[in-house]
Image (cartoon, rainbow, N blue to C red; front, side, top):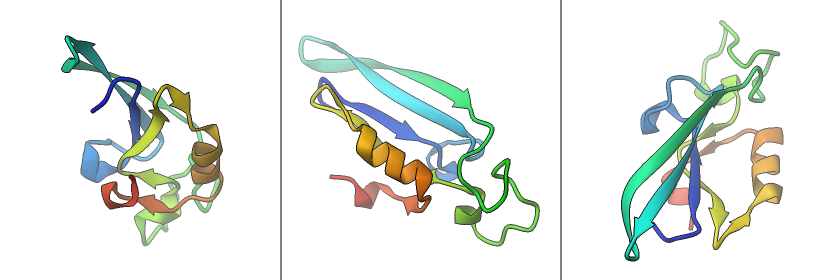
Length: 101
């Protein structure tokens, strides 16, 4: 972790309860080292699944329930990446930690 970074996740493999619960994790630094993390979780009515509500009972794959983001740097170098998060939420795909740089 670096100062000025905030990570977003909602994927069950990364501790998410279900896709509509999006967690934002922010490190708190002291003397240039993270000393603890603050997590905020919000429930969203729809996360882009194949039907309204993002939890269709006939889903066969997780991506059918909506955007499944394992780990995404929402803020990097104190810059909010609105363009990418908007794209991820409008065109859901599964994002894993191997996909972020």
